[in-house]
Every structure is written in structure tokens, then in C-alpha cells.
Image (cartoon, rainbow, N blue to C red):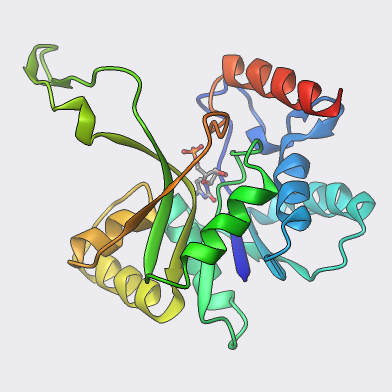
Length: 227
Ligand code: C5P
């Protein structure tokens, strides 16, 4: 399985002036933990990391000590996550028929989750890891008033990995570009194109590290796993 890791974002919501994926988590850059989990997955055979070129020296420095037995390629990302993944799709080796996409910011995903997504992709053309939401979700208007409370039973929080048939995802990205759609995950492009996307049970701990409190939780969980 080929894996793309979008890692070309910034640290704005983290309150950091550098890419949050380079922040220190238990003595290593956050992105190292994400890559190590992917390398430990039996099903992943090739990794492409999307980044901004000014981060490439730091990416190379964190990759060197991992001594990856699998090819790891750095690819120039875009201004948005959607553009970064678009670039990654163009850079996939020709033989790639399926692809997993996993946010660099989700450094707590386990190798088993990558393997389960790979297995599930043999039975569908699009899938995402997801978990039922715990909170009641409110739809709120611009003035701060609640307009609706969707039934929680039908609500799931989207995670990554997300997995796709390469030709289908490329076509949906092209369509999205033509139509000017702006989405925050790749499944949304398939949905807008009328394609079905399946849920694979995600992991409670598979947080997207976004704010300083997430960083503290990640250190705690990774520390527990090492103990
Ligand atoms: O900002 P957020 O955490 O939602 O981004 C999700 C993932 O997409 C992160 O791993 C981030 O590095 C990546 N990203 C990207 N290119 C961008 C913006 C975000 O690869 N231009």
C-alpha cells in the first residue's frame, strides 16, 4: 500500500511560529511518531510526505535516524491540505492502484489501524477511519444561536487514514478543482461526486494534534505505550 502524509501545514492554532509537526514530543519531532507508526505497519510499502520546501531539511533530519527500509519521498505541498494531497496524488508511483492518506498531525494512530484500513480497501473504493462522536453536536448560526441538533446516533468524527482507489480520487480532485470546491478531507470530494465512502472503526486515541492540550495528551499516551 502507498501512503501519503500531508505535513505541509503551519502551527497557527498551536500558537507556534513553526510547523507544529516539528514540535518536540517526548524528545522527537511530532512527525517522527507518525512516520514510525506507518513504517511499523506491515501493509505500507511506500511513503510520500507532503511538506513546504523550507521544512525539508528538518524532515530529512528526522527521517535519517529512522533508517527506513521502505522508500520515503518528500513532495512539495500546497497552500491548503486539499492542494497538498492533489500534489501527492500526482507524485504517486505509477503502479499505485490504491492509496492511504494520513495526516502528519495524527501521531497516535497505531500500525494496526493502517493495516485494517488497507484490508478494508480490498472491498470498497473509498473509506475513512472514524469514531462515533461523544458530544451532542449543535448547528449554530453566525449570530451564535442554535438552529439544529442532529441526532447523535448518526454522527461520526472523521479521522485518518482515509483510503481510496487512486484513479477515482484523482478524478474527484480534478472535479473539485474545476468546481472550486474547498474541503477539509478527501472523503468529502468523493461524497460531492456521488461516490460511496465506507467507515472503518478508528481509534479513541487517534487525535489530531491541533492545540497545546492535544500535545500534552499525546505525550501522555505515547509515554504510557513506551512504559
Ligand atoms: O491544520 P490541520 O491540522 O487540520 O491539517 C491537517 C493536516 O494537513 C496536517 O498534518 C497538516 O500538516 C496538513 N496540511 C498540509 N498542507 C497544508 C495544510 C495542512 O499538508 N497546506
